[in-house]
Length: 176
Image (cartoon, rainbow, N blue to C red; front, side, top):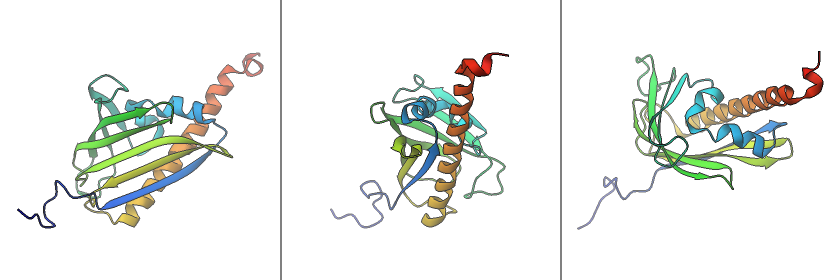
């Protein structure tokens, strides 16, 4: 039995992309300590207003998070775009995790991404890659550009968070 191009289950995702954004200051380990928390994406991505665990053990493969925010290109008339995302794999040694969208109103079919931290001359870099079916309301170039903006925002938040935490630990700053 032959399967034509409409046989979606065996078809490879049509979109792939990767972005990278340097963060000045934080070491890869400092950044990973913050980024590894799968259910706190709202601390690092300004467009994610809510991120909470729905099921599974926090930070363990199988954990499902709910994320919501104002961007919904697939249904702009809806006030909130949301997704439920399952943590698929965590690689602490490689400082990355992979997740997939399991349910959403944002126009995703299959979507799997890996986000992690790499060494960089500036300190570290956020690396975000994905493979997906085409996303409703987006072009591939537009989606990659949006992901670049998100990665730059995460890098800035990592810089801010690490500077605040380093300042809190500095005895010279605590002495008054």
